[in-house]
Image (cartoon, rainbow, N blue to C red; front, side):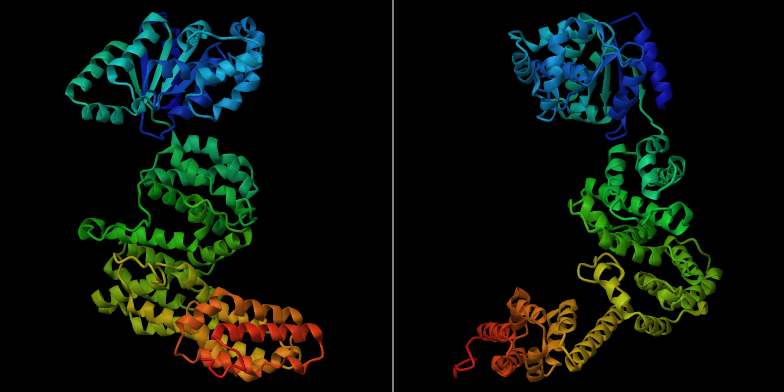
Length: 632
């Protein structure tokens, strides 16, 4: 039942002079039942003089706790402003004016302390206003619940009372006290809990429900409309456009969520909280005039929803289990892998939504720029290649399409800066080429030729290629690559080619920095060493340099440069290299380096002292000193 239809049904119930039944609104967890009560029901019936008091039944285990919580709900509704939603004070507020005004100042202090703060909190607030209360919560509730009050009992399925006592409370509220009562429940979960208590418990509940609950309304909100209400303004602000324009993107996001079977408002809210970090950038400003950026924002929201959905279901990697039925889940495996690949390309999503970490605006923009180039490219060649890959992944092609798909992919293998396919998509492209080459030889697919073209493209933008490896668990088959997915030997080859080429480039840069005339700048060497992922690479860069020349050049270095060298030597990373690279010659290199340092070769006091500090730090690290004949 849609919200408008439900509102009409509730109004009919409120207008019914009969006071001996309740109504129930049912729906799955997170579908928006509570949001409906707090944001629509209170406003619409409040305008007619009704006061809504909603309490959660979560964890209620006794009648005392129930009335305690209901009393808190009554005072909270008064504390938030008016009783009737019209902007005027109701009779209850006039009757207990000074008391309500005093408690209204205190009530918010207790709202965050837990649901059972209730009577003790109210009594404390009352004492501070000069009023002593020595009666139970039930008596106070019956005193304060005026006419035209609607009691909403939320989370019924999470109540800890047995069905007899629970329904006894409901009966007291409805028949004895003549209240209008609306129950909110996930009835499927409620019945499942009752079944676990035995058939008698379920039958008792059904019998009492038949007596007390005359109408059960399934809640079926318009997710798209609700999403626009909740998120439209925020997305519009993020894009720097009018709310109506932002609403179009929200509508696509919500439609996509429904298409994937997600209609949980809480999950949508959690996913949309990624805007907290996106607002630290200007990346999406005026995205309405740039379809690629708008599509990127839509992708970010969809991937955020996947991250929180997987977390809610207890899935930490989003990759299907290895025992998936090949025939029924084959396409889904590629869909999951593709989504996982995209999440790896945008690490700030899971950092924030799952770990509470906030990446810098600069890091977020860098990830978004790379994602934009890879998955929403501007080049026509890359667009056609992405379309060909999608056809293969989702199996939406015919055999006769294969030659053109292969041709589109091969033509796109040029540097991304020239409109070519993004490096992140190379694994997918090779999967297509390898599969079509094996199954449809007439398609013209040639895996070896594709790899050679990829190497040429990599050489044209080596740093960009290396950058994608660092964040591409799936696309570059790095550490943690899921066993469930097919490993492509050509990608392993290509990855190692990139790393090797980057290492060669780093060695050249380090040697050029060492040989450069004038003031020695060790920063280039230090950056190259730190950029290498493994100890072997760091060691190779260092061993490529002449240790004695490096020691002599330190005399030509600024004090700041010497500080950076000293800091590197003292770091745990330097000790790690020495430990793990034992036998590679690194110890001998350091010994030769420290022995060649000559603090007496300069008259500058600061430089002289820093050279001495560096020499002593190296001696300490390798064990011994220059004058120690037993130094290893």
